[in-house]
Image (cartoon, rainbow, N blue to C red; front, top):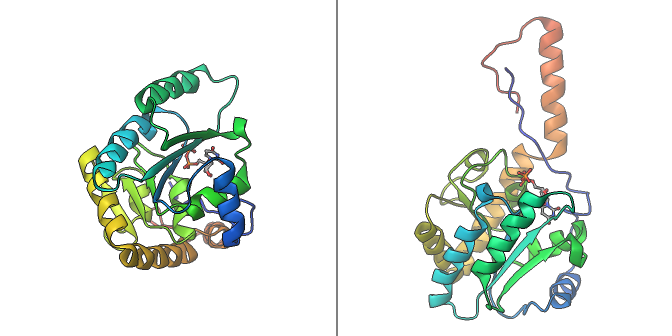
Length: 231
Ligand code: UDP
């Protein structure tokens, strides 16, 4: 078994640099107030992504930051009843709270909008209970965001706890770390810089290409080592 991590393309619409004004205009389009704190999770409505836990954590954060807003952005497929069912559960948990924004491709949230939402957020969450790799974490780290992520799957490969974000295992821990980051924006900023550096080193598409080439060269040379990590 050979292990190569996925990667992001920094020049794709989801990751290209965006100017401050464009980011604000995108958020205003969805009635999000860019003067107040914004926390975001971009992911499908799926129990493993734990959107209900994200809302519970947000509610704890709101006790300390009454103006905090939560964006849950998801891509919805018309032929996926399971995710619609989980969307309904999430919407019920959100209730009448107008500071929770449930956004999706059906409201025109495409790659550029996801890009702007991630860039416009103060803290990005990926509070998964189980995860494959978690490309949303990579995308947010690349955008210099501190990420609070579940201590599972590929999130562990990306978040160095306390350096570019926090790994968490409960709603309470998640809320506590988000509050800490909102209280210490300079720390969040430095963690964001660390995160981008981590992605630059390990999770850009050129690094992935290089890993494949190294693997092919090793196979050709017959010097493949089953323990080798090519990423
Ligand atoms: N994504 C998106 N729009 C959405 C929700 C997700 O473009 O509304 C993208 C997200 O930016 C990421 C991918 O879908 O690139 C999700 O990948 P990830 O590895 O985080 O989770 P998966 O859905 O594959 O379990």
